[in-house]
Length: 355
Image (cartoon, rainbow, N blue to C red; front, side, top):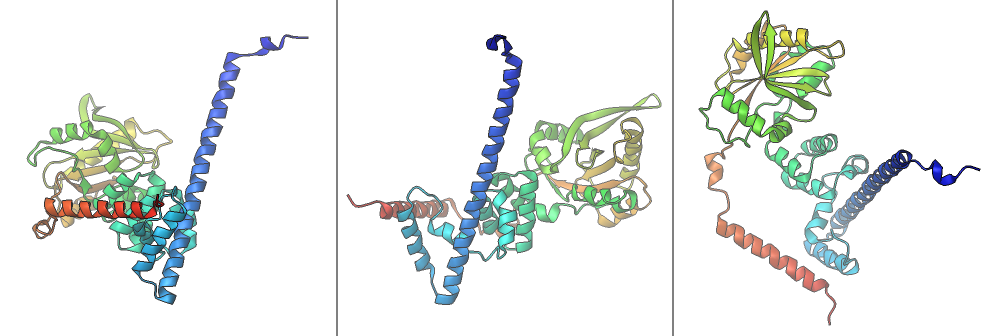
């Protein structure tokens, strides 16, 4: 009879342990998602019933405040029953339970609060919920994307993709480009040169990737291509893992001029011939300029047979003058914060049992 201890293998044990770890992590994620879905659905149901009572029985905000205190007293270890959160639970924004179960349950409740606070349009809220799920945004990233008006910017750049690319690649390619791009994370001056802009984007590659969107894989800057013994350099070269194609980005510090698409067309042809494989879809080019005239761009792209998009970028965002005098002062902000802190302390005191 063979010795059982001799059958033990470190490599087999390591594989077995790794498999168990992966299964446990998967189960943890699934359990977390299940708990989150149940919690979001509970919040939605509570909000729906509050809203129904308010409509049928004329309940006012005082009842919601009392309800918050009673629920916090009954469930002192459970967060989420503050007056403000009960107000967010009201189902005015999401009347369909199916949306709550299929979409909202896939991310934390506080993402939903950001959607309710910062967006008035139900169409925009629903659009951002799908972006959260598809991109795995944190709440801070969601807020940043809302404040940078991603909904209005995404897919709005001028291009000739519909004419030069087959469907559905043309539609997908259109959706990956924005107008304008938001480069607020850069600190360069407005009169900087193109190489300075390029270097700054590389230094801030994480922020740059976030602004470009999901799917862009960085291949290099000043990427060299040799054609007929002459070297040409691409400002930025990416590969898009969802479109399965190379993406060339050409940076321009000034206004768009009609000569730019011709140069980009040459770059695209070179990449298609030298880098693209049979498994890759046609290369696309994006020209980023400081400014552009819509008609000039459309005319310049009209006769070009290569897929090219033209967009602009913003290095610094400035509030319009009519908004600046409407911002709260430091003193006003301090008063608001003090008021919120006092409310929190009062609520905490009201839920503590008398000694």
